[in-house]
Length: 338
Image 1 (tube, rainbow, N blue to C red):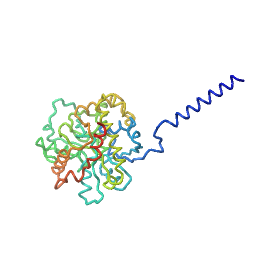
Image 2 (cartoon, rainbow, N blue to C red):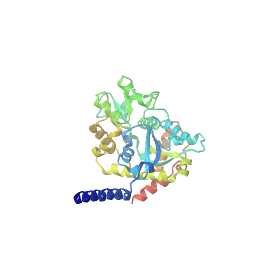
Image 3 (cartoon, rainbow, N blue to C red):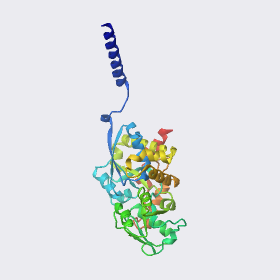
Image 4 (cartoon, one colour):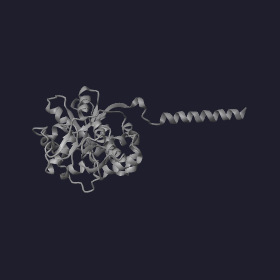
């Protein structure tokens, strides 16, 4: 009887200790998390630091629960932000310029940079180890949406190499972003501009070969940035600061880890691509310095992006960086980390 009483007492102590221990642990419960609707322009390995921030739990550390949706176009990201269905957008830095120039009073502002160069690659039908942009004269390229940064950067590079789009080189711009690879596989065009992992998937199928990095040829551009409506920034600075802090941790993690480690960290976001393929893509992006180690946008690079827009005939005069860039959260994130 005594033995049974001792066992019961021990169980009570253990259970009590567990309960006390559980109460003393400071964990963020799901109910305590603030939901943030994040709308990305497309799903691409190009945005690896964002996926790392999610997979490593950095947003949850900040008390944020990210609901991620994919818009398939910067114009659709803008629609989500302006309608209020999206809290934060990830898209091209050109999109807020268009919104601002349309006279939108509650316009969209860039607050943190994710990528610092074009993330697309030119894919041809044959390997071209001695590729030169000048060799595209007389060829047809499947490009992007008119007015979108991918298409404007491509045209800018062609002009830089003495080729006039529409005259020396034909560019197909009327296909949906998701349809370009399929059109190329079906026999349309001599080349196609593709993001990853699509370019690597074509290589794996022997349906195309990466011949040039458009990002390496264009130079530094605030290509993909996080943005929010001016009113959102004014009303919810605490959430935006926490969001930027998490993104910055993702950027640092990517900088400090190998291509394979990054691939493993983001694998769940790309179920159709194996680890070897992911690793190859990450290494390709790392080699061209795609990801910066700071979310702070370069105003000089932002002005260069607008120069590209002017060259494409999509912008009459540049917008001052101070109007469409809020450095507050990015600079504070970097300061917090030190």
